[in-house]
Length: 335
Image 1 (cartoon, one colour):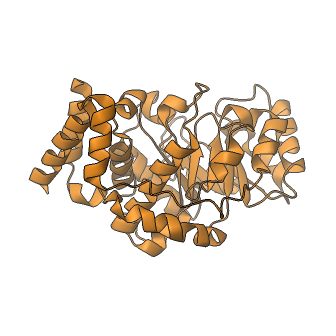
Image 2 (tube, one colour; image 1 turned 90 degrees about the horizontal axis):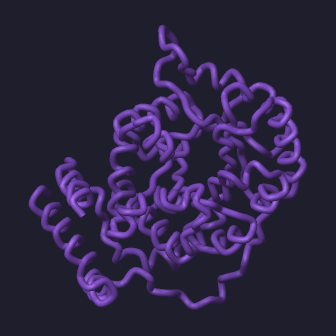
């Protein structure tokens, strides 16, 4: 619990704390209006190949499978491939509906930075989008929010699209801090990003506990966090910016789970890991079946704060409620 309390202190100490904690009371109306706005948000399916496949020939063969499956897909798609494969995979993707993406970048344009790859280099290979803030970059390579923010700005200023990845750990999820963690990562990752610049940004919500574990957040869990993220943009920017923002879900997305996830009104795509390495599986994800949920009754998922606190207290013996109240007091004292 001490680690969680440290996180709460960090949240409260962050300047402008009130700006990254929008009220969830705006969500019921947002749920009604967002379905109508889906037409302005094309779905975006992205395959993150990570440190795969093992050879250039395998990479080209996989890219060919993706291209063959993309002709009739809804929305947009991209594959984020290792640096050595960018040129060759880009050649395979040329003329298709699938964009070429890079998994990382460096903030400098040139110089004595051994092992670094600049935005100019990426653009010259045909890259259209770059990831920033993936949990593996945060945890394995030690990238902090300041570094991620610099990369976000560098990517946007280069004219490419930036997929900013955010999400909570298992411990943070168990403490019911998923919204607070996402709000903090959004506020820090998008520092200096104007509303106009948001047209080059896509958000990928990836609960860390679901990445590569086989665990998948239920559609209801994912939708509630996505709805909160959209409400954050309403508060931090505007309702127009919030409705235009595409928010992907990532975390062990499979052909079996994609349809129900994509039926949620605030889920606009997926950032896919392991399943993107199997042509048949990623083809099914790209060509998801749009389930008709228009006739379903509107659920008032965003209960008033008092009601939500009471439910949490009843279910968890007051543990999460106490943490929430402590965080609220800290934020209130620093605002």
